[in-house]
Amino acid sequence: MLKDAAAHLDDLADFVVASPTSFHAAATAAARLEATGFLRVDEKGAFPRGAGKFFIVRHGAVVAWLQPGEIDEAAGFRIVGTHTDSPAFKVKPGELLSSAGWSQVGVEVYGGMLVNSWLDRELGIAGRIVTRDGQEHLVRTGPIARVPQLAIHLDRGVNDGLKLDKQTHLQPVLSLAPKGGLLKHLCELAGIDAADVALHDLYCFDVAPPARFGLHDEFFASGRLDNLSNTHAALTAIESAQPGRDVAVFAAFDHEEVGSATTSGAAGPILEDVLVRIASASGLEVDGTRAMLARSSCVSADTGHVVHPNYPNHHDPVVRPLPNKGPLVKLNANQRYATDAVGGAIWLEACERAGVPTQPFVSNNAIPCGSTIGPITATRLGITTVDVGIGLLSMHSAREMCGVEDPHHMARALSAYWAA
Image (cartoon, rainbow, N blue to C red; front, top):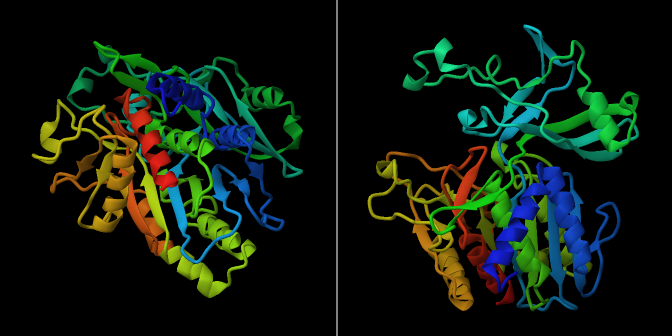
């Protein structure tokens, strides 16, 4: 797939379909890593010594690494960081809602979604159910819910400005049955008894499959491209990576869309836990470990914005990236992105070795940009970090779009970064 852009895009589509939630993305990545020779490590036990390919899963996050036989005094970590979560409706616990003869599922908004994009779409429900014995059970449905929009006949001013109350206007319809059977249905799919359920982490997802489109099929539309597109690119790159002097690390965090401050998020200890334990298993003490971190670098791979043809004034007047022109290298004077000249040079070298184009991205000065795991990782660990990503339109919509070539460009650039 690193040689064939079409095959890579087909595989990305399959990965997105298999990953309606961060928990499914972690499970899918884990299965693929095991299929390519990576050994799953239990964090509650000792970390492995010696050469090998390993990974851990913590909730909706995955960290994988290629460990050389010995870590010499010039080695560092080469890290690619992504995230597995996307904006969505999260299902609330408790009974179903009831209104005017309809049964509805109670939800709250997870992350900074474009709310209107979720209207009038058939939605599935997926995630994990945890039983009283502590076991996790992944589950997903077909299309069972929808947030119907009010007809224009009943709101003549809707096209002058749609206003949606997150509590009263966004609860999906589920059934006309007087009593809901959602939990029962989910438990039947998971093969468990509803009486054994403790709690759940469930989310709605758009069931529409990914698709190519455009006059020359040059675009790709899908849910959750932010950030499964970069997660998939990193996954395919590390699947074919070979051990080198440096330790190659792939870290796919959860909860980036809500600030990363969790046990499986970039602001939590998960990456530092893994790096320190790799160094310790290789015989390094505190000074040697900190020296190794100082020799390390991180590519924070998250989606960015290409110029919008209908809103060009929302972009910088000169720096205007386009689809299929290569991944973005993202810069911000206020360090909302971690890129500096040193990290940028690392990225440009990787792209040159891969034969991949790249484009700068900066924001319009009047419109603040978002942020990524990059500044968090740089702050937590003191590692030189560069923020890059596949360019999108409709970011945080239920259905985003990118160029068909850019996911493949990203995978090749990350492969070259790890091969250095």
